Amino acid sequence: MKIIVTGGAGFIGSAVARHIINNTKDHILILDSLSYAGNLESLQSIAGNERYQFAQVDICNRQALDRIFAEFTPDAVMHLAAESHVDRSIDGPAAFIETNIVGTYTLLEAARQYWQGLGEAAKKAFRFHHISTDEVYGDLHGTNDLFTETTPYAPSSPYSASKASSDHLVRAWLRTYGLPTIVTNCSNNYGPYHFPEKLIPLTILNALEGKALPVYGNGAQVRDWLYVEDHARALYQVVCEGEVGETYNIGGHNERKNIEVVQAICRLLDELVPNKPANLAKYEELIAFVTDRPGHDRRYAIDASKIERELGWQPQETFESGIRKTVEWYLANKAWWSRVKDGSYAGERLGLTR
Ligand code: NAD
Image 1: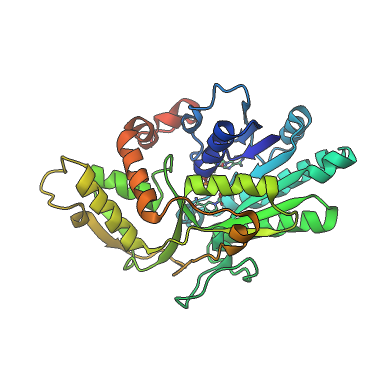
Image 2: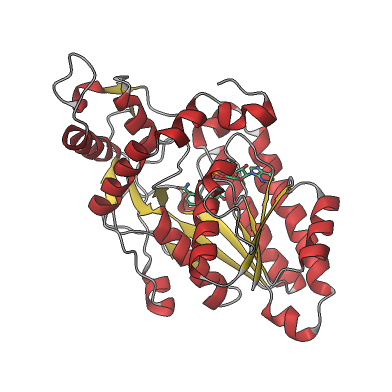
């Protein structure tokens, strides 16, 4: 297969790209605008492979998309490109509307035009796989409820509202034009190559520097955590074996309160780091509760039984094994994250000095 992976320089997209190159014979073309979240250094281990190509393209640029579709002639698109950080969507929603809604629309149109020009067999085999989030469902108030594929949409933040819009567009392009689409909605991911603005890498890296570990509100918000490589495997299985028109929820059966996640990281660092910052007996001493995020969802939890039943997918990592691997990865890969933190990963191309 030849697969376009949009957003392939991001956290999950790069895991998908590494999974495909390392475990299949497929060819991929990564299509990514290299926003602040895109990092070619996350793709270094596969960049020399002859089945790998990269194009720096914005998904809002229709002309560039048309050229890529015509030249690469994909069998499938895995669409991960997005603005993805909830806090940024609260501070500046415009980029979320542009990329997540207008960008998805532009990509759908480019895919549709290309798909309509294919022969009958190729048309039938083509897949447009849209990767989305469980945040489109809003939040759960009962402790035993779970999001299923039929839970009504009730997004809370500009991020989740923009993702919900894109999900609707994708389903409409199947219903109206027949474009063979599939949607997946996944819970919170964590693992290697995660941008350090997100809870888990932020906690690890702040702790290593002896900085405060910010936890919103009282830390009682519950998230269901999935190790990113389990998600990448699920996505590849869906694009190969999923039914057109179906939605698959993907989750890890790993509900944890945010405060429990931060405490688990602190305990691992106590065990794995021989030299703590000065005056610190335990990393937990750095935990600092901060004013809650506006509109903060209380609990997300996903029912992933459909993908398990229909495609036989199962997560391989528990939260305990995945968080240990993640902490160990950050301890072993300072070269990757220090270039993200000092801005030099992007500095050459964007002039960033964050
Ligand atoms: P990320 O922010 O790490 O990566 C997004 C990538 O998209 C970056 O490489 C960025 O450069 C690229 N991009 C942004 N705007 C673009 C544009 N206009 N044109 C082309 N490329 C652009 O995000 P992620 O965490 O890897 O998430 C990937 C997808 O998975 C997103 O669609 C997100 O909504 C979804 N998702 C994420 C999670 C999670 O926990 N991270 C959970 C469920 C679903």
